[in-house]
Amino acid sequence: MSGEFLIRQLTDDDWDAVVALEHDAYAADGLSEGRESLQSRALGSPGTCFVLEQHGAVRGYLLSLPYPPLRCPDLAEAEETAFESGNLHVHDLVIAEELRGREIAEEFMRYLQARAAELEFEQISMVAVRGTDILLRLLGYRANREVAVPASYGRRAVYMSMPVH
Image (cartoon, rainbow, N blue to C red; front, side):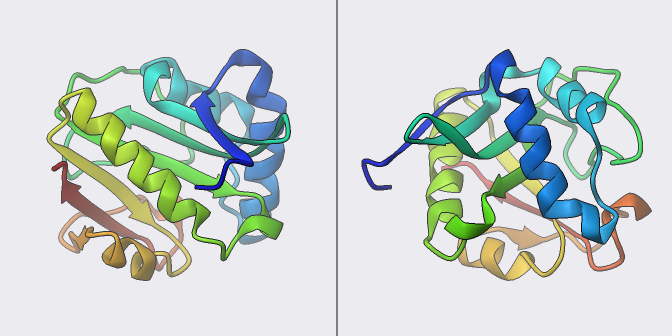
């Protein structure tokens, strides 16, 4: 990733920017969760939630949390339980629209994989929405089509996972 970007841990001061990015990315598809649900995902694992900063502004974020394998949070409900798990679930990754297509998401995911290895997670999982399963396959994720994904993710959602190397 170029020197103009910094990946750092999410802080309380970042939530307004995160909520705005999430709304811009998902509201038109009916997938927007809102602040309370987003914050609930980060409460149980603040050390695995990050923002992408460019010139001091938050331009992307990644929320991940330990979650039982082959399961995922329901977008319609806030998270009430923090799980102990060897599976790190990427709940959400959003990059500002004007930065998409520059391989920034791929770099962000590689950063997460390195961090997951440092934290001794065994696997990373994610639900691909709106056709992002193509990108995740290129990054080494495998579709787990046997996993029932909550309807709140939309009809084309696919649960995917990969081992942490």
